[in-house]
Length: 255
Image (cartoon, rainbow, N blue to C red):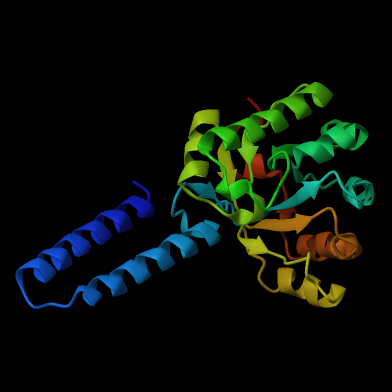
């Protein structure tokens, strides 16, 4: 069982005991409030921090001390072609977690991903702010819609999924199970979408780099393109080899 279920069971037991004490003794009903507040906070934090594996199992890191993996979210996007050019020069494979509507709008870039040996993952169809409030059935529809869009372009259906914003909840856990996909997290979050300085962004990644790391980047950000060559070179100088995240984790990339 995931931590969500254990936490919920403990919460219900505590609330039952307190409710019984309120009923049988002079204990104030306000004693029910603190455990309720703690429980709600844990539910929110568990949703935000994907590495807790609170609602569902996600894969965040490999075990090979010499391998690292680059992953890019939100594409195909404005910097995708330039990033592919850099990866091609250095012969580095990567994973691109695609927003379905962006794949439909940019089929040539999706074909480049596939033809140049990169992994194509699923990042929902709309990547809307409302995604996490949807039912499990609607989430399934988005995942399948993205898979079918990618299949129509390159003939493969992704099995690896990265939750939008890295947020998880019980509905997403059910959708992942029903679609037979795997949730992929990260061990290094670059925060390239908010980076103010290329040198700081590069240092944030390199200073924390370890074997087995899965690095989260975005192919929508000019600063990501700006640091990519130096990131690859310096990581290789440290003795690391770039591999696709499916090889890193021993998972099938496609159904």
